[in-house]
Amino acid sequence: MPVRTLDAPDAPAALGGYAQAVEISSPGRLLFISGQVPVAPDGTLPEGFDDQCRQAWANLVAQLRAAGMAIENLVKVTIFLADRANTLDNRRIRQEVLGGHRVAMTVILPAIFDESWLIEIEAIAAA
Image (cartoon, rainbow, N blue to C red; front, side):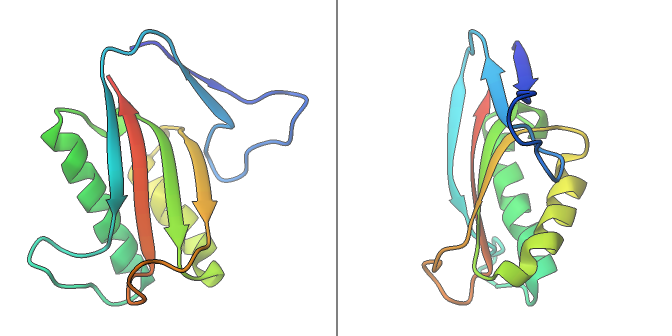
């Protein structure tokens, strides 16, 4: 699948290892992943932001796997954080998960559906 990341020289630089834009030419398949919350498959909720963040990413990766895709297929990620104080930890864990793979990304600070959830992640993948 031809993918090109773009960072326009006449716009602000992306901070934190993501791309300002991602272009896909002729995708064969698109996968739209609903918001993945930090609940484990057994229904438990990890304590603390780091563990919740890793669980939400694990749930997202599970959806990719179910579609026969992987992290490298992600093209757009939207992260919902319950607290601005977790911004840097979110970036650190996201970069651990994505490695050098750059995606188009948005981080939003809303009131999340369940107030015990500290993060929710939705994504679009292409293959």
